[in-house]
Length: 282
Image 1 (tube, rainbow, N blue to C red):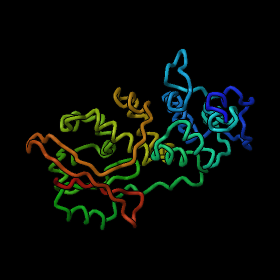
Image 2: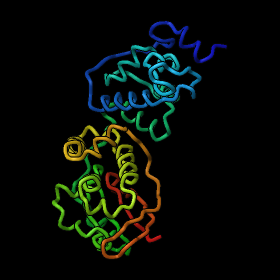
Image 3: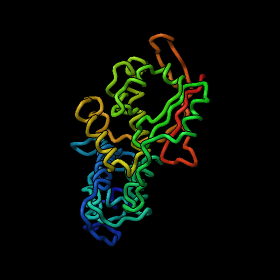
Image 4: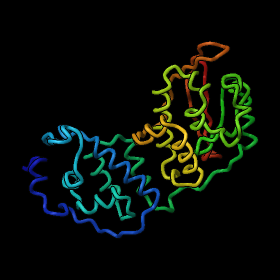
Protein backbone atom coordinates (compact mmCIF):
# COMPACT_ATOMS: atom_id res chain seq x y z
CA UNK A 1 0.00 0.00 0.00
CA UNK A 2 1.50 3.31 -1.08
CA UNK A 3 1.48 6.22 1.35
CA UNK A 4 0.38 9.64 0.15
CA UNK A 5 4.01 10.67 0.05
CA UNK A 6 5.07 7.72 -2.08
CA UNK A 7 2.10 8.24 -4.39
CA UNK A 8 3.45 11.68 -5.22
CA UNK A 9 7.02 10.44 -5.70
CA UNK A 10 5.92 7.59 -7.96
CA UNK A 11 3.23 9.46 -9.90
CA UNK A 12 3.90 9.38 -13.62
CA UNK A 13 4.12 12.73 -15.40
CA UNK A 14 0.64 14.09 -15.99
CA UNK A 15 -0.94 12.16 -13.14
CA UNK A 16 -2.47 8.70 -12.91
CA UNK A 17 -5.99 9.38 -14.19
CA UNK A 18 -6.59 10.20 -17.83
CA UNK A 19 -9.11 13.03 -18.11
CA UNK A 20 -10.47 13.95 -21.55
CA UNK A 21 -9.71 17.63 -22.01
CA UNK A 22 -11.33 20.08 -24.39
CA UNK A 23 -9.89 23.57 -23.97
CA UNK A 24 -12.09 26.58 -24.66
CA UNK A 25 -11.45 30.30 -24.14
CA UNK A 26 -11.29 31.60 -20.57
CA UNK A 27 -14.51 32.84 -18.98
CA UNK A 28 -14.96 35.12 -15.93
CA UNK A 29 -16.50 32.24 -14.00
CA UNK A 30 -13.54 29.94 -14.66
CA UNK A 31 -11.12 32.72 -13.74
CA UNK A 32 -12.91 33.03 -10.39
CA UNK A 33 -12.73 29.26 -9.98
CA UNK A 34 -9.01 29.24 -10.72
CA UNK A 35 -8.32 32.04 -8.25
CA UNK A 36 -10.31 30.26 -5.56
CA UNK A 37 -8.57 26.91 -6.07
CA UNK A 38 -5.17 28.62 -6.03
CA UNK A 39 -5.97 30.34 -2.73
CA UNK A 40 -7.06 27.06 -1.14
CA UNK A 41 -4.06 25.19 -2.52
CA UNK A 42 -1.72 27.72 -0.92
CA UNK A 43 -3.59 27.43 2.40
CA UNK A 44 -3.88 23.62 2.52
CA UNK A 45 -2.33 21.77 5.46
CA UNK A 46 0.43 19.39 4.40
CA UNK A 47 0.44 17.43 7.65
CA UNK A 48 -3.30 16.75 7.34
CA UNK A 49 -2.50 14.96 4.07
CA UNK A 50 0.45 13.05 5.46
CA UNK A 51 3.01 15.15 3.61
CA UNK A 52 6.31 16.45 5.01
CA UNK A 53 6.85 20.13 5.71
CA UNK A 54 8.12 22.06 2.71
CA UNK A 55 11.34 24.01 3.11
CA UNK A 56 9.81 27.29 1.97
CA UNK A 57 6.14 26.89 2.85
CA UNK A 58 6.44 24.98 6.12
CA UNK A 59 3.24 23.05 6.84
CA UNK A 60 1.05 25.21 4.61
CA UNK A 61 0.70 25.02 0.86
CA UNK A 62 0.79 22.42 -1.90
CA UNK A 63 2.25 22.50 -5.37
CA UNK A 64 -0.01 21.94 -8.36
CA UNK A 65 1.76 18.65 -8.99
CA UNK A 66 1.04 17.48 -5.44
CA UNK A 67 -2.64 18.33 -5.72
CA UNK A 68 -2.88 16.53 -9.05
CA UNK A 69 -1.13 13.41 -7.77
CA UNK A 70 -3.23 13.20 -4.60
CA UNK A 71 -6.46 13.77 -6.54
CA UNK A 72 -5.48 11.26 -9.22
CA UNK A 73 -5.69 13.72 -12.10
CA UNK A 74 -3.32 15.04 -14.72
CA UNK A 75 -0.99 17.80 -13.55
CA UNK A 76 -1.63 19.59 -16.85
CA UNK A 77 -5.40 19.35 -16.31
CA UNK A 78 -5.23 20.82 -12.82
CA UNK A 79 -2.88 23.56 -14.03
CA UNK A 80 -5.33 24.49 -16.76
CA UNK A 81 -8.21 24.48 -14.27
CA UNK A 82 -6.32 26.78 -11.91
CA UNK A 83 -5.39 29.04 -14.81
CA UNK A 84 -9.09 29.59 -15.45
CA UNK A 85 -9.32 27.69 -18.71
CA UNK A 86 -12.75 26.43 -19.71
CA UNK A 87 -12.00 22.70 -19.75
CA UNK A 88 -14.27 19.71 -19.29
CA UNK A 89 -14.72 18.69 -15.65
CA UNK A 90 -16.98 16.28 -13.79
CA UNK A 91 -18.40 16.52 -10.28
CA UNK A 92 -16.51 13.35 -9.34
CA UNK A 93 -13.15 14.83 -10.31
CA UNK A 94 -13.96 18.09 -8.54
CA UNK A 95 -14.80 16.03 -5.47
CA UNK A 96 -11.36 14.45 -5.55
CA UNK A 97 -9.73 17.90 -5.80
CA UNK A 98 -11.97 19.20 -3.00
CA UNK A 99 -10.88 16.40 -0.66
CA UNK A 100 -7.21 17.21 -1.25
CA UNK A 101 -7.79 20.94 -0.72
CA UNK A 102 -9.91 20.19 2.38
CA UNK A 103 -12.85 22.27 1.14
CA UNK A 104 -15.94 22.76 3.27
CA UNK A 105 -19.36 21.70 1.89
CA UNK A 106 -20.14 25.36 1.10
CA UNK A 107 -16.83 25.77 -0.71
CA UNK A 108 -17.41 22.58 -2.71
CA UNK A 109 -20.87 23.78 -3.78
CA UNK A 110 -19.28 27.06 -4.84
CA UNK A 111 -16.67 25.22 -6.94
CA UNK A 112 -19.28 23.00 -8.60
CA UNK A 113 -21.42 26.01 -9.56
CA UNK A 114 -18.47 27.88 -11.05
CA UNK A 115 -17.34 24.81 -12.98
CA UNK A 116 -20.81 24.16 -14.43
CA UNK A 117 -21.83 25.00 -17.99
CA UNK A 118 -22.55 28.62 -18.85
CA UNK A 119 -26.18 27.83 -19.66
CA UNK A 120 -26.71 26.99 -15.97
CA UNK A 121 -26.21 30.64 -15.01
CA UNK A 122 -29.48 32.11 -13.69
CA UNK A 123 -31.08 34.99 -15.50
CA UNK A 124 -30.95 38.48 -14.02
CA UNK A 125 -33.79 39.26 -11.66
CA UNK A 126 -36.06 42.26 -11.71
CA UNK A 127 -34.79 45.45 -10.13
CA UNK A 128 -38.18 46.22 -8.63
CA UNK A 129 -39.81 44.55 -5.63
CA UNK A 130 -43.26 43.06 -6.39
CA UNK A 131 -46.11 44.90 -4.67
CA UNK A 132 -47.25 41.85 -2.72
CA UNK A 133 -43.74 41.37 -1.32
CA UNK A 134 -43.60 45.00 -0.22
CA UNK A 135 -46.96 44.54 1.52
CA UNK A 136 -45.53 41.52 3.31
CA UNK A 137 -42.55 43.37 4.79
CA UNK A 138 -44.77 46.37 5.62
CA UNK A 139 -46.97 44.06 7.70
CA UNK A 140 -44.03 42.85 9.79
CA UNK A 141 -43.48 44.64 13.11
CA UNK A 142 -39.71 44.01 13.17
CA UNK A 143 -37.00 45.37 10.81
CA UNK A 144 -37.27 43.71 7.40
CA UNK A 145 -36.03 44.43 3.91
CA UNK A 146 -35.72 42.79 0.49
CA UNK A 147 -32.52 42.41 -1.52
CA UNK A 148 -31.77 41.32 -5.08
CA UNK A 149 -29.07 38.82 -6.02
CA UNK A 150 -26.40 41.52 -5.89
CA UNK A 151 -27.74 42.64 -2.50
CA UNK A 152 -29.29 45.83 -3.85
CA UNK A 153 -31.92 46.84 -1.28
CA UNK A 154 -35.21 47.06 -3.19
CA UNK A 155 -37.66 47.57 -0.37
CA UNK A 156 -37.92 47.91 3.42
CA UNK A 157 -40.43 48.56 6.17
CA UNK A 158 -40.79 51.32 8.75
CA UNK A 159 -39.02 49.29 11.45
CA UNK A 160 -35.94 48.91 9.28
CA UNK A 161 -35.98 52.64 8.53
CA UNK A 162 -35.99 53.19 12.29
CA UNK A 163 -33.02 50.84 12.75
CA UNK A 164 -31.01 52.25 9.84
CA UNK A 165 -32.32 55.77 9.37
CA UNK A 166 -30.25 56.74 6.28
CA UNK A 167 -31.87 54.06 4.10
CA UNK A 168 -34.45 56.46 2.68
CA UNK A 169 -31.92 59.14 1.74
CA UNK A 170 -29.13 56.95 0.33
CA UNK A 171 -28.60 57.41 -3.39
CA UNK A 172 -30.43 54.54 -5.16
CA UNK A 173 -27.19 53.55 -6.89
CA UNK A 174 -25.55 53.09 -3.48
CA UNK A 175 -28.52 51.39 -1.81
CA UNK A 176 -26.77 48.05 -1.68
CA UNK A 177 -26.16 46.12 1.54
CA UNK A 178 -22.59 45.12 0.68
CA UNK A 179 -21.71 48.63 -0.49
CA UNK A 180 -23.08 50.20 2.68
CA UNK A 181 -21.26 47.74 4.95
CA UNK A 182 -17.89 48.82 3.52
CA UNK A 183 -18.51 52.49 2.77
CA UNK A 184 -20.97 53.92 5.32
CA UNK A 185 -19.22 54.95 8.57
CA UNK A 186 -22.61 55.23 10.30
CA UNK A 187 -23.35 51.56 9.71
CA UNK A 188 -19.82 50.59 10.74
CA UNK A 189 -20.30 52.36 14.07
CA UNK A 190 -23.53 50.42 14.63
CA UNK A 191 -21.72 47.06 14.43
CA UNK A 192 -19.76 46.26 17.63
CA UNK A 193 -17.47 43.81 15.79
CA UNK A 194 -17.38 45.23 12.28
CA UNK A 195 -14.38 43.18 11.12
CA UNK A 196 -16.01 39.86 11.95
CA UNK A 197 -19.42 40.94 10.68
CA UNK A 198 -18.10 42.25 7.36
CA UNK A 199 -16.07 39.09 6.73
CA UNK A 200 -19.11 36.93 7.44
CA UNK A 201 -21.31 39.01 5.14
CA UNK A 202 -18.75 38.91 2.34
CA UNK A 203 -18.32 35.13 2.62
CA UNK A 204 -22.10 34.68 2.42
CA UNK A 205 -22.33 37.08 -0.51
CA UNK A 206 -19.74 35.08 -2.40
CA UNK A 207 -21.49 31.78 -1.67
CA UNK A 208 -24.92 33.12 -2.65
CA UNK A 209 -23.76 34.94 -5.77
CA UNK A 210 -21.72 32.08 -7.23
CA UNK A 211 -22.00 32.14 -11.00
CA UNK A 212 -23.62 35.59 -10.93
CA UNK A 213 -20.31 37.17 -9.96
CA UNK A 214 -19.49 37.54 -13.65
CA UNK A 215 -22.72 39.42 -14.43
CA UNK A 216 -22.53 43.11 -15.24
CA UNK A 217 -24.28 44.14 -12.01
CA UNK A 218 -22.12 42.01 -9.75
CA UNK A 219 -18.89 42.86 -11.55
CA UNK A 220 -19.64 46.60 -11.36
CA UNK A 221 -20.31 46.36 -7.62
CA UNK A 222 -17.09 44.44 -6.95
CA UNK A 223 -14.99 46.80 -9.07
CA UNK A 224 -16.40 49.86 -7.26
CA UNK A 225 -15.67 48.36 -3.85
CA UNK A 226 -12.15 47.37 -4.88
CA UNK A 227 -11.52 50.99 -5.82
CA UNK A 228 -12.84 52.67 -2.68
CA UNK A 229 -12.30 50.24 0.23
CA UNK A 230 -8.97 48.89 1.48
CA UNK A 231 -10.84 46.57 3.85
CA UNK A 232 -12.83 45.12 0.98
CA UNK A 233 -9.70 44.56 -1.12
CA UNK A 234 -8.06 42.61 1.71
CA UNK A 235 -11.11 40.52 2.51
CA UNK A 236 -12.07 39.88 -1.12
CA UNK A 237 -8.62 38.40 -1.75
CA UNK A 238 -9.23 35.86 1.04
CA UNK A 239 -11.89 34.09 -1.10
CA UNK A 240 -13.94 33.15 1.97
CA UNK A 241 -17.13 31.20 1.21
CA UNK A 242 -19.78 30.45 3.83
CA UNK A 243 -23.43 29.49 3.73
CA UNK A 244 -25.95 31.75 5.42
CA UNK A 245 -27.07 30.65 8.86
CA UNK A 246 -29.61 32.36 11.10
CA UNK A 247 -27.79 33.95 13.99
CA UNK A 248 -27.80 36.69 16.58
CA UNK A 249 -27.10 40.24 15.41
CA UNK A 250 -26.22 43.13 17.70
CA UNK A 251 -26.51 46.80 16.78
CA UNK A 252 -25.45 49.89 18.72
CA UNK A 253 -28.19 52.28 17.67
CA UNK A 254 -27.36 56.01 17.99
CA UNK A 255 -30.76 56.72 19.61
CA UNK A 256 -32.10 53.42 20.95
CA UNK A 257 -28.85 52.01 22.31
CA UNK A 258 -27.97 48.32 22.13
CA UNK A 259 -30.46 46.24 20.14
CA UNK A 260 -30.27 42.45 19.78
CA UNK A 261 -31.99 40.49 17.01
CA UNK A 262 -32.12 37.07 15.40
CA UNK A 263 -31.13 37.41 11.75
CA UNK A 264 -33.26 35.32 9.37
CA UNK A 265 -33.32 35.08 5.59
CA UNK A 266 -36.09 33.64 3.38
CA UNK A 267 -36.42 33.24 -0.40
CA UNK A 268 -40.00 33.70 -1.72
CA UNK A 269 -41.23 30.77 -3.80
CA UNK A 270 -42.65 33.12 -6.45
CA UNK A 271 -39.58 35.40 -6.53
CA UNK A 272 -36.48 33.16 -6.22
CA UNK A 273 -34.15 35.96 -7.26
CA UNK A 274 -35.06 38.00 -4.19
CA UNK A 275 -34.40 37.48 -0.49
CA UNK A 276 -36.40 38.74 2.48
CA UNK A 277 -34.09 39.62 5.40
CA UNK A 278 -35.67 39.85 8.85
CA UNK A 279 -34.30 41.01 12.18
CA UNK A 280 -36.53 39.41 14.82
CA UNK A 281 -36.13 40.82 18.36
CA UNK A 282 -34.26 38.28 20.43
